[in-house]
Length: 501
Image 1 (cartoon, rainbow, N blue to C red):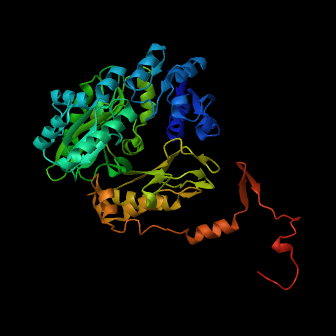
Image 2 (cartoon, rainbow, N blue to C red; image 1 turned 135 degrees about the vertical axis):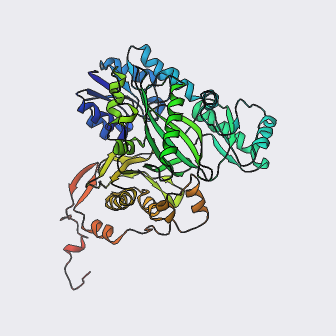
Image 3 (cartoon, helix red, strand yellow; image 1 turned 90 degrees about the vertical axis):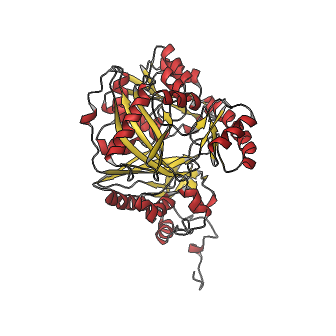
């Protein structure tokens, strides 16, 4: 087993990995930028190393600095978390070249699944259903002919990317040229690769993903599904497991398809095979494979009882995964809500500032993975994810009720969050019936259905009372008692006379 691991990430996922390391008796090394000098993950680690300025390319994305930090701290391995460099084959190869262990799949597996066009070809060979489409297109005429053959609407997306970047929905030929140009620019800026593919766009589809896990000894299983259809701009907001749509037969079919996809690239460690699911036909199609730990992994942990980060580390250290497929079961229902510092009333623009209060909910069946605390600064440099709120209950109805209560008890002052927005989504009949598609949020907001109207646009009465009675103010990042200025000649509380406030 490893003695020391460097975590090449920040925020809640860095702390999540550090907790797992503590439980396994492994020391941890945090890395941080100048903007994160006082961040929670820096304080939580056994040691911390400054990488550079706030810009990601000077800190968290600087491969040479990360490798040097690992070697200088005498770490045995590097865990990339998710995002940043977790799906970068060159980074995984650089870690191996430095005689360190990359906690994740091999560079070859990452490379095979990193190119969306190449991965679709691989999946077709492996017998995994794929969305009708075309890869390797270059000219506008080629795209035009492909779109005409598939039939509009179509989806143009980056071959090397994910997360909604370099992706455009095209409803007619008149929109095609501009969509291609825009997607190419975005793909080049985000992934350094402007190549695109085109495929059929399923407007009312659901996003269902299958967690897979494999070791270096040839064992490979699936850990069931997560429903991830509540999205805005192709970014997930709410995830749950099990999916309310799947029958046991479909669940097993999709699980076996995910295993076939992973086996096609000799996969080991944690990974997620993502599918688009058409509820009208009960057909599912391979979308992509995320060759890393997912943001929403806690819902799988909640229903299976397995600690995915523990097993990531143990498998990377060479252990066998001891469970056969028949040993793994789903128990109860779990939901995750991503709490972002963003304003739903301004198109979900990020919100920055100091967290004057950050009070997490507690109680049976409630888990919070966060990287912030009261007094921390939320900056514009990084992703605005504040925390992941996870609940588990014996069934979906109780899980929804528990999540509503937990969201209501989650207190964040100092920045705007999406908490009330998620509460409004959970209240809708569509969510309760499990029929929300990936386009539901945008369509609902565009239709002025009142989804935002149910949220408080002015501070709630209890917030105003709390502000009026607050007995501390934040000065230079330190909490100090608020005292009246005895020497101020204009202090109204020191004035004499008949006037009263």
